[in-house]
Image 1: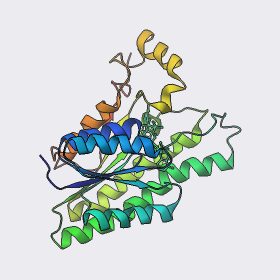
Image 2 (image 1 turned 135 degrees about the vertical axis):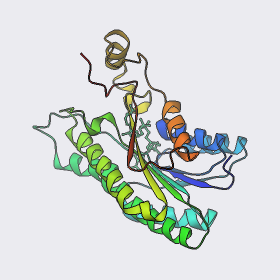
Image 3 (image 1 turned 60 degrees about the vertical axis):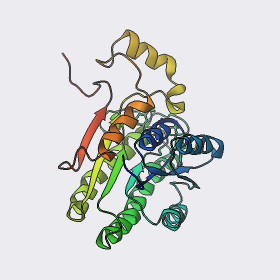
Length: 259
Ligand SMILES: NC(=O)c1ccc[n+]([C@@H]2O[C@H](COP(=O)([O-])OP(=O)(O)OC[C@H]3O[C@@H](n4cnc5c(N)ncnc54)[C@H](OP(=O)(O)O)[C@@H]3O)[C@@H](O)[C@H]2O)c1
């Protein structure tokens, strides 16, 4: 059990983020549950964490608004006096899927702002705080996890901005892993495949067919938020201490080249 450690999970209120929060709470972590709009969903995660005997701080902040991210870290440190793990989970697809011959500047900037720029500068701030806390002996080590996507390497020409944002997030995994290793902060990337959440509910029928009938993934089922939660829990438990910059596919085998 991990008593007293604190994890900040962006977009921790719904979907994959919720699955991550519940897995961490079961492992003994206290939580900062970030959300953007849906405070009710965040409250449900808070209650579930409290039922496990954990503390949870709910913080509204928008990944597209860097000032709100600074305020979120301030609140975290005020409340818990420490931060041991950051999970960059929150992310959005384009409001409207558009052929990349028509992708708008507004959509490009919005998706890149939330999925890449926000996590980069949030990581920068949190990493500096972790370095300070490690040097003063208040925490022993730190962990940072990026939730990217199979879209980091898979072309979807109707949501180019999403794919580009996830490919960029993958590069930040390598960069932060390189920069932060000397301080005892390991950085990991989890690449989920097709996971059943509100984000994918709009394309449910299409993916039902592709996964269940056509065998898109060797493991013929939808991924669940708990599948990602379990991968995060393995990292959180310290089971990969000699790995950093590591990519963990949680995708039912989607990434395999098959003949
Ligand atoms: N589902 C999949 O198949 C899949 C596959 C690969 C990767 N992913 C990635 O996994 C992550 C989570 O996806 P999901 O399917 O769980 O999405 P989701 O069900 O739509 O949930 C998104 C979560 O992120 C929060 N959020 C959205 N925009 C935000 C912003 N600007 N600032 C702060 N929080 C924000 C939402 O909070 P509110 O409810 O308050 O808005 C919610 O908690 C994303 O990065 C996504 O790209 C998903």
